[in-house]
Image (cartoon, rainbow, N blue to C red; front, side, top):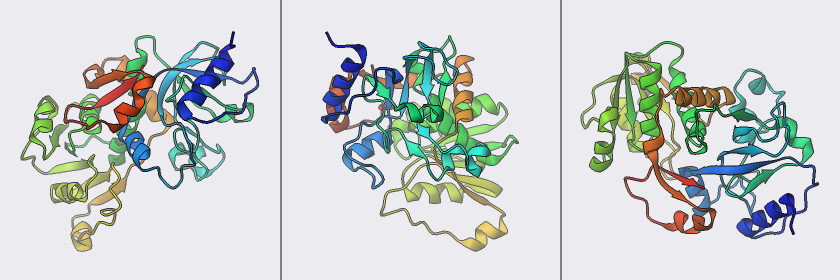
Length: 326
């Protein structure tokens, strides 16, 4: 009969299609209970980024249980994984901007991710692992949203500590809808609008501020992967406002142009937002645990690990938001 570690290794080998060197029996691991599929995973499956060494197990929206004590958390603890390892000593790490660490290693890209039964790490890397305990009120399926919601919070905080009077979100997909819900929880007095050029998707987010003709806004969040989305948002940015590039553009559109003089005279700010930090994922867990941000209705599909290949190859619809692997 196979031991637990041998079973995990066999499952990892089956999913990855490679032979994995045995880990010491004492090596800790995260038993994966749920993993979410995001657009980054779908893109990497079709066209792996140059920084990714192959073969690689994808998956960075991961939660589960620890096999034993790790960094002060006891074995069996329910946790969500902050999906990166950093150096911990650079200025970015020390100032709470770990997502900009020059030596960052991402699960699902540089390290094997959570589309497997478990994630195992050599002992010498454990002190760099960041796992956040789940509040008792959260299910594993809800906890999958900690990373994408944390990314949304990271983008919204580019306005600073004050509450904007108005927010325009370009893109009514998962991240756009999460941004609207987060803004509603953080800034009760803020007028929130979502624009999407797909009428069906716009209708889906009508209750969150979906608007075909949104007015000018103090904060614009571009949550759509197209240059035209940026230009549309820039046209509706108020003087003194901030526009945040939340989504990456494809290779053909990644070089955008703008009128420097208009940005200069209107004192507008252009900011980028990439990933999230552990503090923002912790805040995301708190917002969900308190019921301030609801996510259950954004779960479009639940699949097994065995259905992963067909999930990556199927055609998505406007009603696809979050697929969760059970």
